[in-house]
Length: 368
Image 1 (spheres, rainbow, N blue to C red):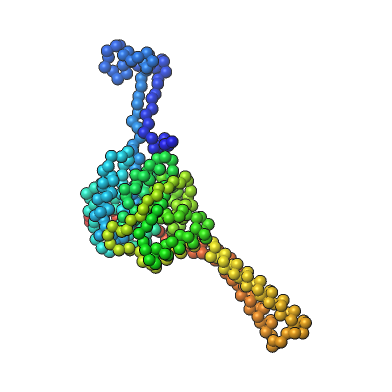
Image 2 (image 1 turned 135 degrees about the vertical axis):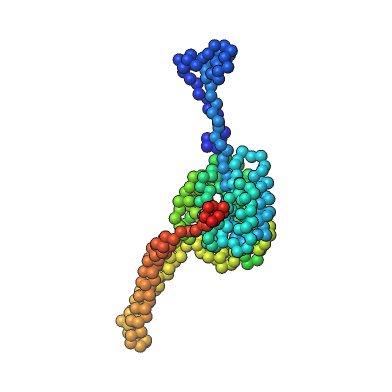
């Protein structure tokens, strides 16, 4: 059942009998409250209020050095926006410090079509920061669709995401049935997603990425999150709410080359693991505990050999081995416990902004 906020509604107000009498005029009057010609059942003033405006759907798309693919992005989004739907559209394109002609192309498109909005970051802050900037700019939207600018995720799937949202889901995930990546890149991606589901305190759905839809409650919750090191699929899963899925086949890039290097992907994977899992620190603690236990066992073993008179080692060996293993284990346990706190404190105490934006093009400051 569609929620009231998304349905087009009309309300009818019926005035009580005394008020109807006061408003009624002689037959034939042209007054809008002429009730004489109404059937007996509806001899009352009826008002049909204008229904709520159509829901605003924002398509949020970070862009970094995508000049080769942007013309097709504009054409396919315009085709989507021009189709007859019960939606209002806005494309929020975030330039993440591009060094090619992407910013110029984006500015030209926003000048041609008011449905396109440009957000320019002062430098390259990274995909996650650019995505956060776009979602912040979409704060007034009823729903936000997040996707990459390389068109591996087809804009033509967006109506299906909206349909699931209208049915009541606040998070709609585009689930990949297949993907075009091959070789080492594909192996590493599959390995990461499999590992993340095993170690994460907040598992994400398999074969999902940035592409999907966030309803207004999820969008507002996401914009309040203070994290500096972000992993979008994990944060989206952490927020919760009703989730629906739409399967699709992921395409190859429409043009150009992938902009995220292996080092960037590795850093992104580490952000996901360390932001949503304490297991690495627990492993250190368990390792320290295991070493300490081995130290105790070896200490007891060598002490028993010495007491039984069968110890052949030189004097001092037993004491040295026992102390080294025991103290090493205790130190690793301590490092693991401290790491549980320091790893989280370090990211937050700096309190730097996640991103910085340039003034909008055409503003008074830029005109000066």
